[in-house]
Image (cartoon, rainbow, N blue to C red; front, side, top):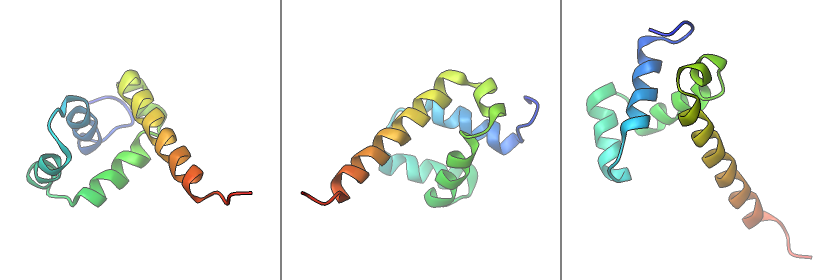
Length: 84
């Protein structure tokens, strides 16, 4: 196990890196593999990608997830801006 990461955190990163199917199947797989709701899984993942240990463990995955999160935030922010 990498320093600074729990077994669960390593498993979440590995799961996220290897996931290929659609979102509905992913939610079921999350429940089956981790006994977590999808919301809880994504809370864990969201905090995890902010940690230096996760970046060391899988830099490409963490950078991709951070980039995707930032893009989603920008899209949401663009939708709620008032029109001048």
